Image 1 (cartoon, rainbow, N blue to C red):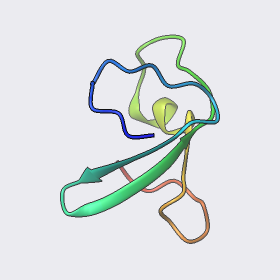
Image 2 (spheres, rainbow, N blue to C red):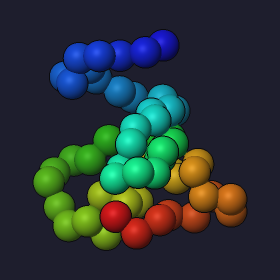
Image 3 (cartoon, rainbow, N blue to C red):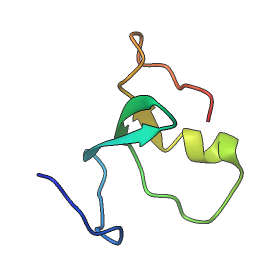
Image 4 (cartoon, rainbow, N blue to C red):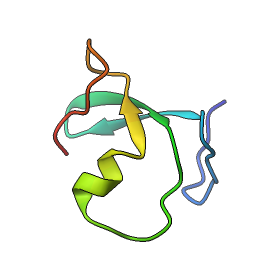
Amino acid sequence: MRVTKPHFQIRPGDQVSFMRHRQLVHVEMLSPGARRGPASEARSLYLDLSSPDGTQSPG
């Protein structure tokens, strides 16, 4: 499904693709955040499917 509205709600298990600079990034949401926190905490909420080994890429 292609979503064009920025306020579309995603849920755990949903996958999202977007451009970061000139790189296509594909992530899967693991858990919603309970609060606005540091980047290190935010990275634990998704799985980066763009990297070959599934590890988190630096933000």
